[in-house]
Image (cartoon, rainbow, N blue to C red; front, side, top):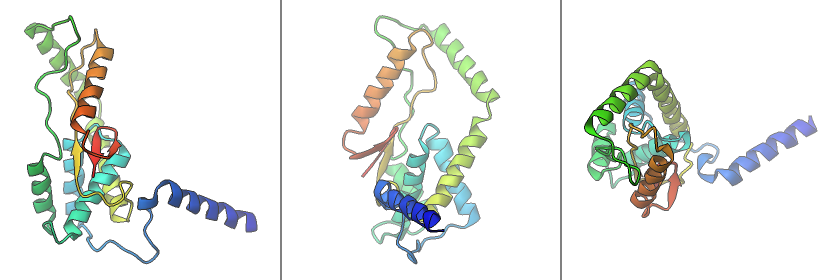
Length: 197
């Protein structure tokens, strides 16, 4: 019994040390509670706008939305907060074309072929449903008080191009990394391709 208690205490202490913003004080609850319909709306927005985001980033974005709803400096309603974030460019924009590797140019025919192939591959995987479920879980975790970004109310997601250059994949990934680092240079906390402040 004593060993089990000490193990549970050590686990709780490590959670407090590793993720201080994710555990709220006992008895402290979030004032903003979303209805099931609002949970689904927020999860759909996160899944659609940030499909590449890590789970921790999704929880952080959901917590930022809930934090804005609680803040007197921001609107109270979910739709208004989402519109405000959209207006600030928080969800990023999709690049019009994939980054090209140095010394290699994809022609229009090859580019169209790659786009069509990518759509075919994406359509066969059930990634959309999994992405939504992951986002819904993240929204509920944020409602329960999880906040890995320690109360950040602003974020910026960098959306990656869907089309990959199959011949120079490494060069394309390096270009994506450089673009993410450039777009998030003013954000002190970064989780994957999402920056928080």
